[in-house]
Image (cartoon, rainbow, N blue to C red; front, side, top):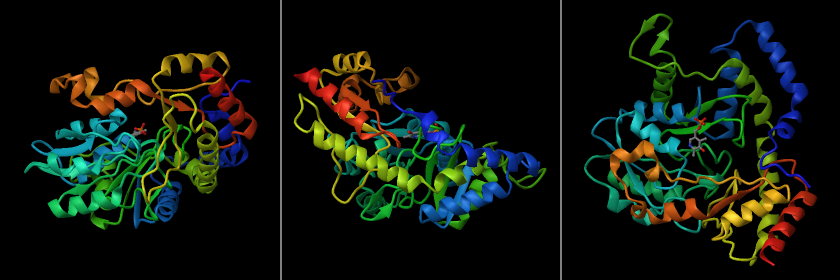
Length: 367
Ligand SMILES: *Cc1c(COP(=O)(O)O)cnc(C)c1O
């Protein structure tokens, strides 16, 4: 049996007819950037995320960069961020000129260890950027309390966790301003690049609207040196269609994850994902850890099962960050996760037969 890691073709074919109609509608409107489709999507996504405002931007990285910009975070400032994340979280901090202050994760949930945050706070710290990694909410309630105590901003990197919750409140609605991504592989994926910020603060929302569009509110009048980072009409139109099914697709992922958890419990040396008290995951990814990762990945590949490593090199060991001269052991948990993690296939539309085949194959590997 052949099971790809992620079947984007299948996911999007489900919407083919509706997406085609949107394409036609956008062509016939003759309007492609900052129009009604975007306004409609921003309203819909703000509703979905239980926030007052959503502002669409070009991609998830830009959502984080513009969020930090809107808070006037830059040179001389420090931002606390997990040591284990996709590099985009770190890059956003670097691009605004601030310094990354990595904090190790919990080894069971892979999210930032809240007990280690306060010791990294200095007089230069301006913000905490929790990442809701692999789809699971970080312990955002606790993070908000720490931030309040030290008068810091919180900017959630919610690229992976659309629809996840912490104590019943959605990720992307905790921080002062939050970024998300609609990269095709995300739970809410466009047919190209896309991203958005969510916030309850009207001032921050209007700042982002100016920043994303050349620093201009009125065409050809530029108040500040802005960026070109807009979510175009076509992607917004596609996202409007796909957003309607996001919750049910997330539920499908949770069902698949529960099946994995049941079948793979106690198998070999596998560590299964753990969900923190009060948190939920949209299971953007189903990440296991094993000392035999290389062998297991190869075996699964031979049996037709696609897997991916998220991520093979932690940010502190990337060449891009050699200016900090971090050593490998400076963030041992980030390093350990990078060396042992393996993401199994999980996507809406995956059937029980496929899940059983994957689990049986994993069990055979360890037998
Ligand atoms: C995907 C992702 C981003 C960046 O999103 P893009 O749309 O690819 O720029 C940021 N942070 C995390 C954790 C991500 O997974």
